[in-house]
Length: 233
Image 1 (tube, rainbow, N blue to C red):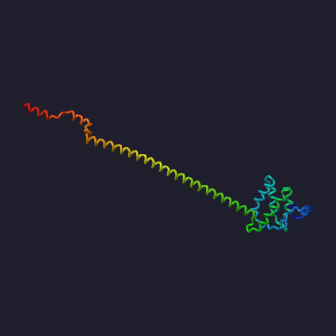
Image 2 (cartoon, rainbow, N blue to C red):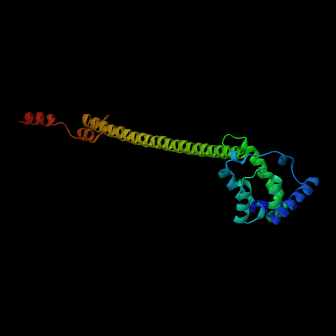
Image 3 (cartoon, one colour):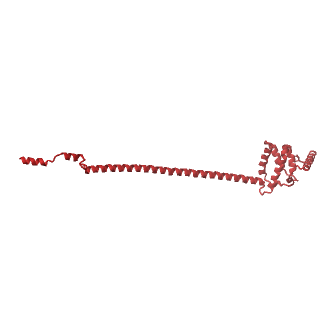
């Protein structure tokens, strides 16, 4: 681990030589991706944005959280070196902790670093696109919620309006039935009063059929008796 040593010593030289031999051996086997040949200027990268991703990605690949591995990886990236960052050395050093998962992890890290240094804000393009997608999804979800609220509001207004119309119709029907009943009562009352007036105007009835008519036909006229009395006198 050459980044952890300072000064010159026999052990450091031996370690550097061993690392370089291992890197050359892996190069011959084609163990490094092509984009490792591109240089990265770490000063153009926003590590504040990249650090959470490194922590999350290491945890996903290893299956558990390990602060030591995370700190070691970040130290390797932030450490200043005359030759600059070496992705091949990073992969070799991370292999001691992550084994076979070190290669895909370091490839992803270098891809993000290359993208970040090209960004004016030092953020990988993939991070920006994902953030846009999240914002778009949140906006669409908010629009769907708003549309659902508007639909429910319309349904409620229509239901309330239909209830008012039905109540008015029922009230009108009750008023019509009451009016027709009152008209029938008035017609019956007029019929009875008309009958009483006809009886008062014609108490004897027609054709001698009434009580007064029969009484009058049975009672003899008093005038003949008076004439008979005068005659005997």
